[in-house]
Each structure stands twice: as C-alpha cells, then as structure tokens.
Length: 106
Image (tube, rainbow, N blue to C red; front, top):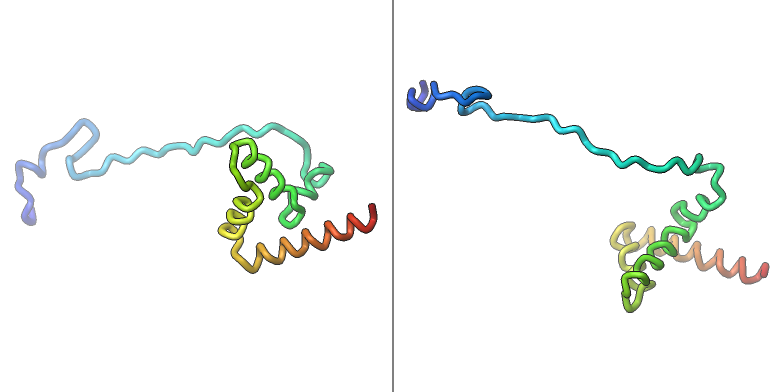
C-alpha cells in the first residue's frame, strides 16, 4: 500500500482507521446579553459611538480602577494601536472641538 506497512494500514481504533483524523464539531458558546433596549432609543448610546468620547472615558475609568498611573496616556496609546495614528488624531481633534463648543455654551 504505497510504502505504508500493511500492519499499520489495517489497524483501526473504535472510531475508524488509524490515519483518519477524528474531528468533532464544537458549538460556539455565546454569552447571553441582557436586553437593555434598542440602541437607537437609548440616550447614552450616542456617547458610545466611535467619536462620541464615551468609549474613551469608559476605558479611562476601567484603567483607573486597575490602578494605572497615567490612565489617559495609556488609553490614548491603546486607541492609537487600535485605530491607527491618523484616525485617532482625527477623533481627538473632534473631541477637542466638542469640548470647546460645550465650554462656550456653558
């Protein structure tokens, strides 16, 4: 049998021949998420959109809880790694403009 000893080629396990791979199909487990309402109806979801500043602030809060020395700097580093320099800088500029607008209106 093409270079395979016959003693190996006829041995079988309970699941099939020795050379046949045993494959099992695993179901992907998904977390059950609580039903918190539709995203468009939630008032807080605007802040959680990219560029809204909510994700950044949430990350800063979680880093502060972990005891990071400079949570804002680490959050900026993570953002640059995730989004790239140009995209992150454009979002930062958008946030600065929004802060100026809110400061002027207050």
